[in-house]
Every structure is written in structure tokens, then in C-alpha cells.
Image 1 (spheres, helix red, strand yellow):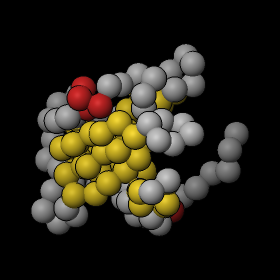
Image 2: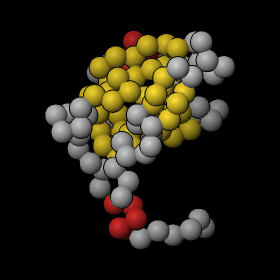
Image 3: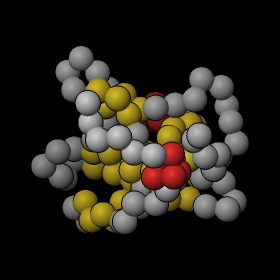
Image 4: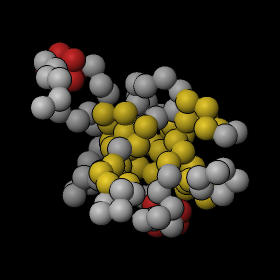
Length: 113
């Protein structure tokens, strides 16, 4: 079993829901990715992320999709883009990401608990 954490440690991770408002293929990287702009609501605003999703998604399929992301990691340089959030997913049978998404529409910015 992995190291156990307590609830206060988990509570430090800001996992929020947001709606993808734009998605553009970036095939100039060694591993092609999709650049996402995600609306996390008024309090948090719009954040960018680069995600290697091209095996399971086309960029245009992602518009209006609600997804979960960690919003309080440090920004990360990915190619010529600064990724501001980490989108979350589970691996499919080939180890490729499937995005975590609520099964009903919820308010952008809502925190996972």
C-alpha cells in the first residue's frame, strides 16, 4: 500500500471543475498535445493547460466538456506554453488518459471533496 495521508493533506490539493472553452492541437512537440483553455468560474478565471490527449480525443470534441483539474500546482513550461493547471484522468487499457468529468453539469470552480 502507498503512503497514507491524512485529510488535511488531501484538502491542500485544489481539484476544481472547469469547462473547456477552446482546444487546439499542438503537433509541434515531440509528443503532440492539445492546448486547453478552461473556464473555472469568476473566482478562478480562465486557465491554460497542455495535455497529451490526442489518442482518445479530437480537439473539437473537447469544447464545452467539463473536466477536473488541479489548480494549485506551480506553472510548468511545456514547449512554448506555460501550463497553469493539471487536467486529471485515468489510463485506458493502453495507458492513454481518459479525462475525469462529472456525469451532470455542475458550477465551474466547484471543489472536489
